[in-house]
Length: 160
Image (tube, rainbow, N blue to C red; front, side, top):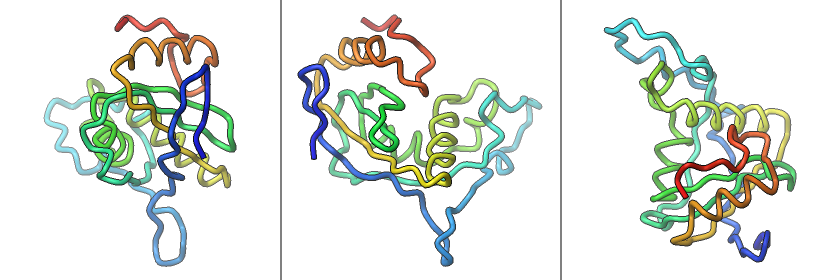
């Protein structure tokens, strides 16, 4: 079930379902507790957690393009990436302790937290991808048109 937006055909990748425990409760993680905070850094705005863990199929490794996260068929986030698999397996899907602190990857924490909250609210989280060399242009165009709530910019990409 592809998603056609602005004449771009995004392929459905998967439904994002966080890892569950033996009782089918989502595993909630606090990776920041594993960080040796020698510089006494403060947590970033989204670093408190809890976070969940998820991944996508490794067959998406090495593919660059634009992705869309939707909740109950509403676009929540539009992003671009150099390596789609890495972005979801190691970025959003597995929050590293360092990323919870100032100077870390706030976006990873924010997107993961939003996915966890949506899942716990019984939202259906779908992931779509468009492999393209025009990733910055298309990302900027779609953010400008849809103003997705999880995006912090309004189509003002400095990358194009």
